[in-house]
Image 1: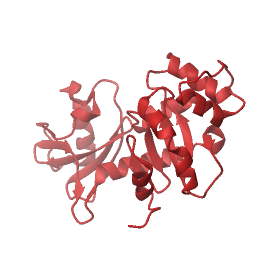
Image 2: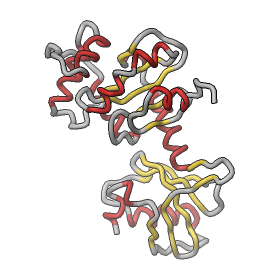
Image 3: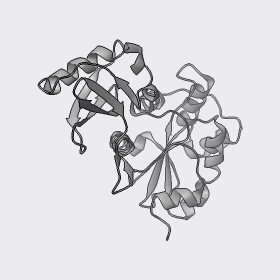
Length: 240
């Protein structure tokens, strides 16, 4: 059963017949969870959730809900039916926004001047939807939303995309080079002290799975491309 936790997507809605009695408490829960985790995975925290009997468990940076009842554990999602919110998604979004908040703007590529509102975007210079999103940046800026780019070369740190991201970062005019790269143009290869690898590792740690992944300043996470109207609506910047 240890392999069940190898992929986060595989753990939702699974039931494990692991003996956990009411007297075991959190120590017993931790022990029996450890018994079904893949080798090397670490339980970072276990906390009570708003749902009685369910716990919020963080494993290798991923947050899941575990329900303990008698001799069984059930791992899945918990919904707040009053607010209509998936609590797991809400917690993951809050954690992602918190981690991004530790990155100084000096380590981001900022498109345009500050407007007071922003969206932070994990981007790959080669991905089709990232290029499509980049075409909307001037409109977003004109409508009051600044774009802050973090690099996430999906093919990894040995890829051409990574080298291209480094070249963009090390260029004399980063926003201009970003636009050239995303239009398929030539950016002079360069190297320098840069944060690209750190940004890639940050994205992996907080659950970025594809690009673009957008995190608004109000904590909303959008895992994929959306147009300006939808993005601004999610940022509460348009009238309903």
